[in-house]
Image 1 (tube, rainbow, N blue to C red):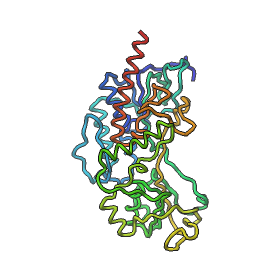
Image 2 (cartoon, rainbow, N blue to C red):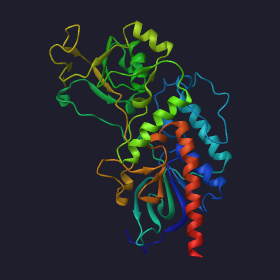
Image 3 (tube, one colour):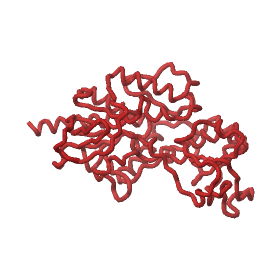
Image 4 (cartoon, one colour):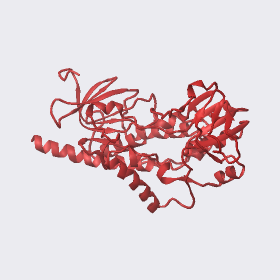
Length: 370
């Protein structure tokens, strides 16, 4: 970009208004950042709700696991039979209004670039113009970057191949034979719903799923977070939450396993025109193929951080080296909802931590300028 072009100077830009972005904006405001003067929050979605607004209609609020309230305002009286998209979108709307966060939307951020002076302002290029900011909170999540693994032969498949991001409920699979791929919570939810209406289902994962029993107490939570934190400190891509926490073995899951629905098969070797195929001897029942009308990939998402590429933050390991919420190599940049903070409670804590460090950065910068 041409740095002589007209830009708007602000202290902090927050990119993303999901759980992490709103938590960060809330704490920044409490620490003295005035919205639209010192603080600008940009969100590409057309309305409040973060990634929740895109979830499938059968994911009712009562089925949501571990949804923690945003800081300063509880979510109370929600009807468990309403869709999570509706409940959480209304909650986020009320939250933004209550605390006057003034989210700009829909705004698409195309790039964040370093300025001409080392350690100076960052330039956030967006569909509503360019902001020159002293600090950046990136809270863009993962929903816009579904992970599509490649399988041998998949281009020949005559059925429907789709990802969780395009799942709209079990009714579209009525009477069909369906393969569900993935070992996370979404895969299990999809599988149990689809099994109620499908002619047949099969569940495949790369590794045997890890089910956990008993309460997920504070010690187990800290141990799980520590595993993810260690990866991002090394600059490695963060792992999925379920890979370190395991799947909670609920009564619903026990019943599904007893009915033969929640029976995991190893990953198939290839996709054929009519379904999937395993190598000889892989399945105990001797079956080496499954004819399918649809293959649903519940294979997760990756962080949406391509717009940060001009800052050259990635390490040879493929991730971004972190120190808490701060990018280790650039104290101006914080990532919330990334790695160990990729959960609703983690996002809340990360938002508070990022706001405090940014406030300190801004205060020290002001003193240095004086």
